[in-house]
Image (cartoon, rainbow over all chains, first blue to last red):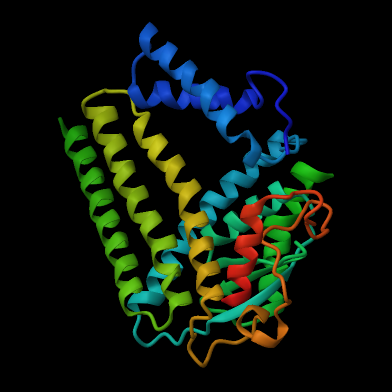
Length: 165
Length: 152
């Protein structure tokens, strides 16, 4: 948890909020700047207790490549799931998979869980109490170990390199 | 003039693809067998559907009307933030309610077996994987929640 240091407990969040506000109203007048700044100060003050400390991005280039890869995978995932839904002869094999986590920080685990939910045929269902395994529901799985290895290589290793190493 | 025709064709293609994906996602939500499979439709196919519609909107308003395209980007951002989180919460509450799944589902998660659940489930793991004790966070709300999870 972040202790309240000042009027801006999370400067980056405040900046992001101001930016999003200006983009939402699509104007750069003084009134909107003032209103956006007020919101950018007020919202972090009300919500800073819910925020974890965010780890630093150690390798921004890798993060960019990771985002592009995830975007590509989302498109592939969409075609796969759409085909599974509209093809009546396709026999799907749903599977609950226990995914043993290598990541340790809560923030990166959250990122991994979101990535898993957005990409091919998998939805992260539950993070275990001890934070060491993630329960994943997959729509169509041939091989449990292959799925675990794929998630490990494609998503978890890059995330670990970006944030934790 | 022909470029406009081609552009309009591309925009129409994106719109049709978006509509088709959104329809398929909703169809999946309607006719897949159990709760956990139904979750896959709205998280994946609908994301793509809305994405295609937004690309079409960006092309139309960005190129033909030459307006700045920021709001579509914001919609995409919010969508990518909210879709996986809501799917995760739905799956989690489904597991908590012990909703049935189809028989061919492989793997037996501990959440669906009553005998493997501990007495007091902890809502969030702490960063150092220790259970939160009452000395460190004496919130009255937590005890109420623990009682409700014990009963449920």
